[in-house]
Image (cartoon, rainbow, N blue to C red; front, side):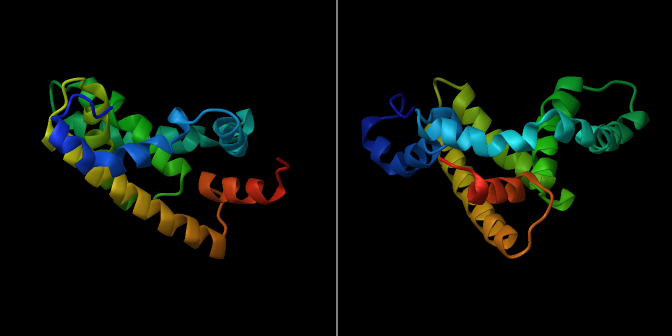
Length: 164
């Protein structure tokens, strides 16, 4: 992940490698299975179907500015941001923070999507991962105090009742 950087810079980004290594994508069993099991309730057919109106509303909001233009880049305007907006919605992130999440996600995606990543792109990814980690620490603490119907609350409830 960091090998393409100059060797003298790799240690500077050890925290990025550590934080990314904690993500579901990079975990091995049994930890991967344990976390995946926690999240499964949030992706059941019933939950996904219940998201349909929310997703439709997100798409409609995204399409609204396009009514004013004769051409649009669908990949940039819809395909790229839609998954981030839907996931943010599922996590209970307020819509006012969706643009913030898009910027952080873009920095991480540029880091992952570029095998010749630069030190600046790596620094941007570290800043984004650090910011999102802090946000979700606060969100988890808040959901422990006040449960919601979002994926974070679902995972917290499942964690208490799941048998591992």
